[in-house]
Length: 70
Image 1: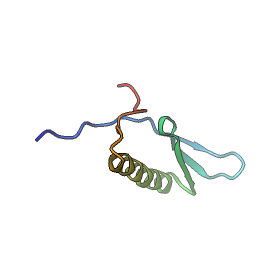
Image 2: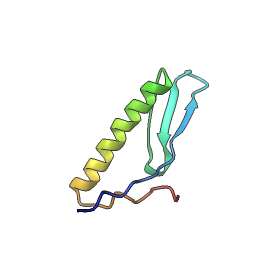
Image 3: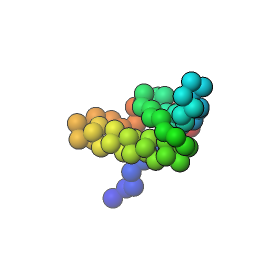
């Protein structure tokens, strides 16, 4: 049995100048979240990514679409 392929997606972290919130996003997948700090934003983004990939697998859709080239 082969190991699952690793996906690489760029994570962009920025600070919203109006609210001061930290924004973490994966632009190629069009998912993003904002929180008070970087660790919280990245944790939430990880949870969103996991959910997104599980949904794609459940619908038998490819999970590599939108991955950043190496």
